[in-house]
Image (cartoon, rainbow over all chains, first blue to last red; front, side):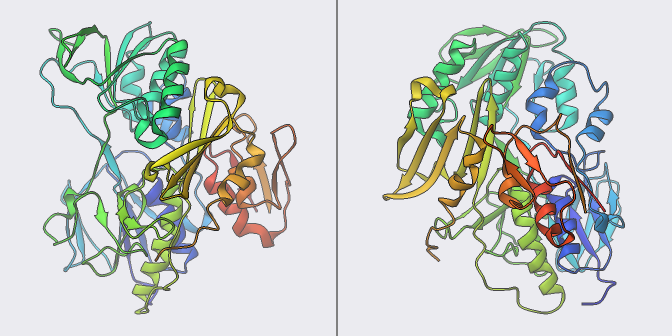
Length: 407
Length: 62
């Protein structure tokens, strides 16, 4: 590898930053350019569905982005950030990417880190009053409508929808959550824990409409209500669309890649069908031999850090003309979620389970602590702890470090 | 190296104590204790601990 080889990282959120840091750690000495669509340096998103929705501080989105900005390692001081200019196309054979403003960047190695965007709903009715929650600018747009108590409808009972619903209920807003597929977060947590959390949240004021979906918004200039498939009309000043995500892969179209759901990579994060291209973060669809050989995207906060390290090693090896190390990449997935007085902490992949059991505690008394184990074909694939002491984190995580890889 | 944790941000997630147990520890009360001036040999682990902190409360210095 020569020190003038240039790496371009497309995407300037956590995944892009971690990729740049890990390229330096892996020995890449050449120039690194990180290109992002947002105007802000990489910042930490989880607070956006929590504390930040409360109050009026900071006063601007720019200040909020600065407050939530990731610290940058000294090794990345010379990394160039090009912000507010989304990459719109790539020529992987010619090794260039082009931005919205028309700038073209040549590269020797490319990191795909463009992540996800919220899935927008196609609904009849006014658009004003409808929000998503992914960026600091989204958060500010929503917060500006919450200065007085509001009637809020959250569309989607996944983790972001449930966190936002809990936060807004605590702040004094009246919140209804609409979800067509089962109980809150049921796809991941299973029916029993999801049902227990639903009851916990209902006791604190959240209303749920399950098994139905939003089919339209009412109102003249802005939303004043939503229509449900059951025929029910719910009054609403604010609608939050938390109905899943779409991978930002359009800029890679035309290069013959498998972009079915994110970017297909091998186990070392090398993009399948391309050379000197790796993917990092929740856009990467990779097989994890902890579980099986099925490539999956993983949307947890821990994934950018895990994948960046391995992807950087892969890309640096390719730039040197070497084969990447053939040891398997088997990160232990983990996520947490804070909702009212509950902290959920999970290791493994509970969503893969075909059965689950309560190992500790009682689902009718979640605040006192509970542990649920998730199994597939009789093997432990995930756990979820609710309000267990943080000193037990290591033990809960290590339940997965001894799984025998299947590949 | 110097380590500082912003205790106004820390929420006792405990991820740092998994990444760098020589430096970060959750005590019996469930709260974080840490070594403010760990050996430079531990830098890689401390960097990892700072990376995995969900509230990004760990600050590192030379």
